[in-house]
Length: 311
Image (tube, rainbow, N blue to C red; front, side):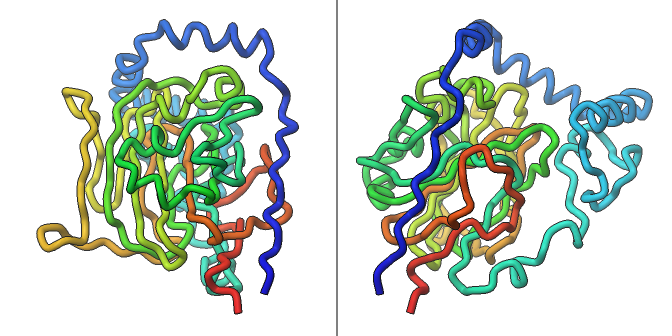
């Protein structure tokens, strides 16, 4: 059976402007990690007088829809970070079993906007018009890690401040490795992606390598300015190493616990927002035709169909 052609992603986003470059210059000068550490502390203040006022301001400023939250009462959260990483109401999203009409449906791992998606061409990923970076530098492992994704597909989703900030499995799979990669903390909004070279391969991030029902899968949670840390459901908070060196955790061997996840199951969360990048192997997925860069997407939305399940 012939495979349907992958829809070509539209790159009609505006080109980089002088304003984009001017806004990016200060980011090279900011003490990025110091500012993020201060934000980490501020986001955990438990004084009702401070945190309630901050939460209410944030809801108004970013038009957060609290009807989707498990607890819609802004004063019920112990801290701003507790609010920011809020859980969804059970009815806020369609159940993965209902949303996915077929066994091969690939779900969006997060709420946000599609930044870019499409083929991984000669090991390179499109960041923005005229800007690319390599899978090898993104994953920061050995050649074995990036090889399965040569000629594969990628999806980049930007989480704005108003979005739900928990990340879920797009397909069922088993965790093989988690890798903390130190780096910068540039902003990851659309303006910055247009002007800062290799942005996602330079920022601090956590890489997850899975064995899934459609083949190897990499899911990368990219940090940004004011992102204090990234949490996982199995290891808690992944904090930057003091020596700022790459650190890896292996799973599923004789010495380590095995972690398996169902499609749609939560795996982690951002303590303040950022970006999720998904890498899939060749001939594994066909993206849904309506997808295009800049399009809003919700966690659990069917964004593609696995070719592995075709009959």
